[in-house]
Image 1 (cartoon, one colour):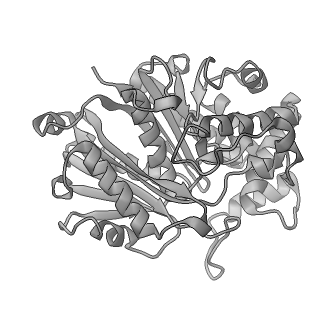
Image 2 (cartoon, rainbow, N blue to C red; image 1 turned 180 degrees about the horizontal axis):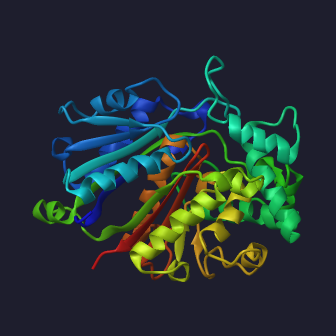
Length: 394
């Protein structure tokens, strides 16, 4: 890995609920065109493309990209559950860093259905079978509770039992997310809420109420990844670099009975450690982060997995305001998955777009002061965790 990698352009389509969304191919076209325009190139300059989506037939990536143009560029379709967008980004960055290509497009999209996530196949082995066995043993049955809140709500309950965390602490994360999303025109939910309103919402599982769960969302996002040499030769932006990136999958520790590890705590911790070591910095250097807050409980435990605060200290971290403007690290200035939305294939690339804007100083009222490095964390059960460190290039 010798080529220096730059984020030359980013683009998004505003996220929306399924009842208000355009089709996935229209969303993807909009995001790709925005990223290409931001980079100042046409599709003909792109040498490879990685398309991320979870819910769709094979070759949806080609179909979506053909709306932009048909240049013969190789298109690889990527599916890694909720970390799909970051997995596409991982492959694009790897292609450029290795020297296999100089200019690569990563884009992600999702046209989701209303309601909770569910499996679509009952005639073949279930990739969650082992996860479900551990979940049932740790938490017992929970009839009528959707799969994702059981996993993440169970992780939150385990954390609260271990450290005595108050329900208000989890609710405060939703309040913060809405406050941040109010300044993001791409976000779905921008209206403010109070801790009391969050706690009064219908109970889902563990510490989670409905206002602590990300909504099913449709949307798209894209990034143009280029080598520094290509970018300079073609007049592209070189001011944002991917300094380090790591992808990890489950180890045996995921299945030792700890509900936090079952939802990727150890995967995220390992990926973050690799990134910090590769970049030569520590978590204390991070001032802004987009992390995987599919539920408030996952944002809370991710603070600790990523080293943003010590184990068992997340409640104080939140109470002191260290997770927002004026504190130690602004988490999810975009509003995160909770409020911006979570179209599975697009999420990782939307995080990339937000952090690129932050490092450029183009985030408007969301702008975090004095940003020189930015951290991205995206996780998918089953499992894959991708942690990416961006830096303002010199």
